[in-house]
Length: 258
Length: 224
Image (cartoon, each protein chain N blue to C red):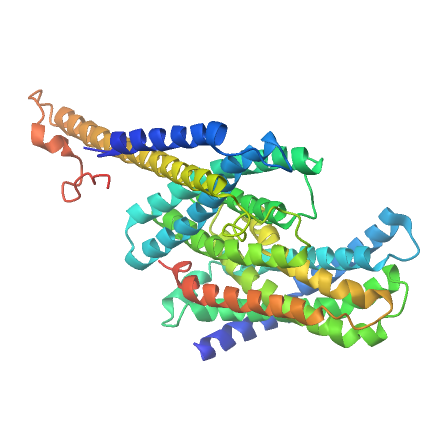
């Protein structure tokens, strides 16, 4: 079976995420400076953190692929980058809205976090182009993994570089966590972070499941097509042997989702 | 590994000396872009911050030309198979290509920086020259390390030139950022900037990280 445990994970994610939403709306206090708009922080920051962690995790998975040569790790890394890129669009959009509300501009170039995230996003936007412009599947997986390792290491370097370049206007959320954030805000933020992480994991697992089951389906179809070809070539209308439907390579059973 | 790298480097440099494919094009391109900026911005001389940006972006674009030519000979003549047949460490190929690119960049800058000073800069560059040269050298090492990796990464894809450009530009943002921040104060009154050390340290860190990454993963690019 594919996608074992997916339903449970999805249910937990939905629960935590809606819990986080409820806390954001009814529990967390209104920010004294920024008012209601500050609540976008509970969406924007967890999304950014999860997206960046996804990029770095994809680099680690790609490194495992290169080390072990197991194609499954390349697929995992690809799906992680795919989802992080999608979250990245959300990060840029919510960041823009927040910037407009609290600084008065949709985009502030002097703002290192915004710019650093944009650069990372632009780099990862090349990943699908690189990946799908290489035809040979084995080489495609290898080159995509090399990219993922390189870009994963680039993420922290880039943030350090851009951050050291500019004066800080960005709300320093994490560095002041212990200090000036009231406990209600901190609790809401942590629950939001957990909800976003669970959402990411659910989507990741969902896409992995979809990819693997369509791959298995293709394998079955190929096997079936070959069987019917052979059958018609022999001009024997007898029913094709059922066990052979398993595919051209019975040595590699359909891999189960983890 | 060293001997193989040196052999490939010598081959590349000899080809470059005889055909003159990369370096003249890069130098010509940067001078043309400076002229373009001279007319596009239409000023007698640029203020320091703007001048630094123009210099570094132009040098990066010139480097891009070199990067997209790095594996051109190997690809067009199918020479990589020969290299792969030889029992040598693949990392040697990256070392050779990166050093070749580094040398190209240095030669190009020997032409481009005077042209830049002549066309776009008000005050003379003389006293600031050592600091600028050091910054350029560190930045060149970083661009060469990343460029060698990116060239090999893009070499197998269908849209090679596009992928090279799209990869190299975001990856070298920290270099351009540090380089232009370090050199902007040098162009004003040729004074020593107090922040120079910090930017050079940033460039150095970038170089070390990407050299380590390239050594760790270049092997996987030139397999089969």
